[in-house]
Image (cartoon, rainbow, N blue to C red; front, side):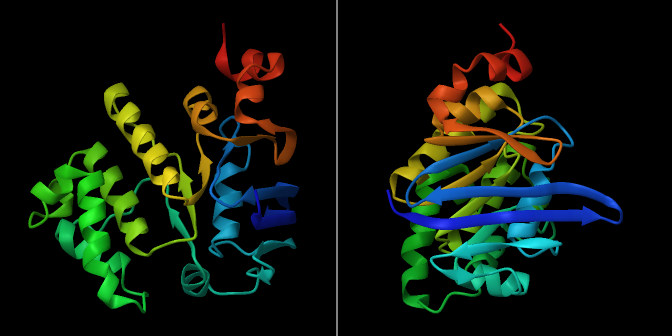
Length: 237
């Protein structure tokens, strides 16, 4: 697999506290990479730094040889790295369709947008049925679907997902992970931050374990799923 995104010695601080302590990650084209760990490990902070929403104290984020570190967040989106934030951040007073249209706002290939809209409606039929309704009237799970669909409308090369299963019922969680596998099968590269370690590693080709701001394990998703240290710390019996 060819490399698409490399994170080198990435460190992020909140004042005097270093939340991410010089991590290295490699994302390969067309793979799901899971970044897992406990609450407070620095997972979301790392994603915010990759997206340009937090400025790293050192390190680089390199997409196909291009350093994204000094770019503004909207420039990083234009470069092809798009994040689905924790908490969804949908625009509740706009319709479902308007949210999706905003996802495609930065695109230059406007003629392709209707075809991609049909695709996300096929992935998430409930959004097609609710397209004219207000996004704020969707359930939590439906809002998560909308957040993912809106990100897909930007036609990303790398999709960053921050805790997509948070607060969802088990059946909805299974549905979200099933769709992520479908999306990945189209060739889209995904970096998945997720507290549901078992689900994340099941669908990930590669995984990293983050503890107190440092990468402590890196391996294939399947190997990590059966790693005694991961089982003891995150999976239980």
